[in-house]
Image (cartoon, rainbow, N blue to C red):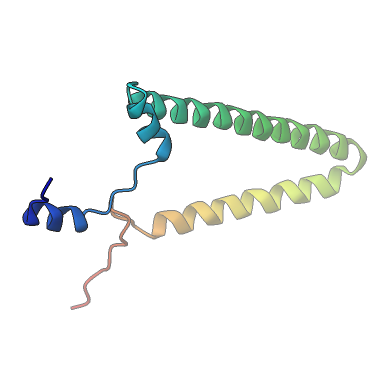
Length: 111
């Protein structure tokens, strides 16, 4: 079977990576969408595990702060003030840097 030169040229310029799992599914007469579904389900499962860990750490942190507050009320109060000041500063910085939807920062033209 002779290759059409134009098609061969287009194919050479087309660098698409197809996972072997997809090729194998097609060879087995199955729908390649199964691969996408499996990948998405795997990502969702991993995200749920990560969220569970994050929630557990948040809960632990809250519990530790409550315990520390009973033992060292002044220190915990100072810590909370530092955290609040830091959060407010971060928010102020984020608002002062006006960012366009495409991620670029707005630059004010100087006249």
